[in-house]
Image (cartoon, rainbow over all chains, first blue to last red; front, side):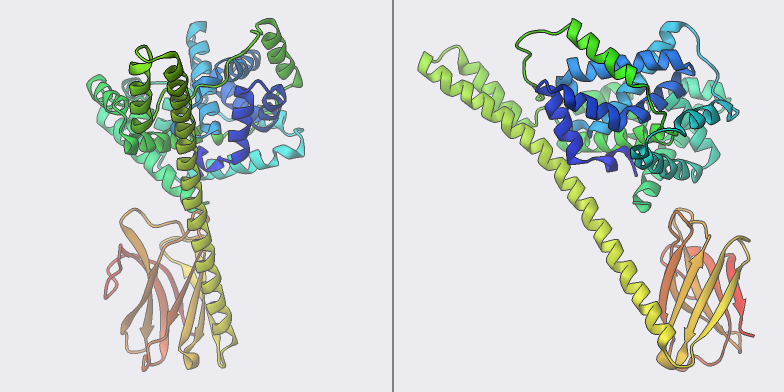
Length: 190
Length: 266
């Protein structure tokens, strides 16, 4: 499943309601997708407080710049995840430090512990993460690492190549093939 | 398009594609949306982290502080489809030259163009969702039909079940439901990795005289499961071995690839 597959009419209706000034719609969006967005912010920033701040920025931008969401360019969840990633990367760069890509699982385990007491209504989001994680695990290591560097570190292909010590062409191929394969797996897993 | 969304294009390539998208190629905008969604999926693999309700309160407080009376409604037509964009441009170009009465009509045209575009965009998403749903329904029907054939094979007189063990993939296993009197068989596969691109798995019936008869090709899903139903060729003769090999897509007339699963008839 790609983010596209998580599309639901309710999400579109919420975005429309937000554009019309309905605060309860923003609250529902927060309840529904806040956990996923905060996970992205934390993963990029590796700092819980900064991640909280960025999530507030993202929610406010969804409200104040509701005209920026265009359903022809993607579904609401894709828009939200892309926005959270982009704003987190911006914040990280403004902080002037790039935390290393986590090679151990300690911080991720901490995230899991933090989410373990979450309400049951987030079980669906947990199932979604499991499905995507399984799909990512099916990629070649080179493909997965290149995609994670590009997504979570916001690195360009030249930066990914330098970071991984791989030829530029190899990195481009890994990213391209990884995304194609990821889409295939998520579709098969639908 | 995957390279574009992952910032893995050279500057010249990127600018060329950006201009192409800005020109309003509907097909490429669709591909872009698809690639963007797949790239965003990378973020969905994280374990969700439940945010404090305080974050919502902080957001609403900020909204209150910056509230603007008479907030305008959404204007989602920056990426207008060509037809809607042309209608808007034409309406706006004539707007200044028409009478007061006509201005109202032109304004209505603009609103209709915007309304139609939003509906078009939503219809495109709904069509995509519907196509996905149809595909899912087809897959479920196909699975149900295969499972019914397995049940039919199990009900046949003289049915036997042969275990196949992993050879190329040690964790893989399978059960062959063998009902030659009914001319039916079914292979139930577990923990077999999906084949590489351009490859497929092929089932073979190998007789006591070492003749390998192709019985059908299949792929495994992301969970490693597969079900293949196959007819038992008339006059096949006693089955000695059932095996699964890794072959080029489309299958082959005789085994050429690595054996992944095999089981001998006791």
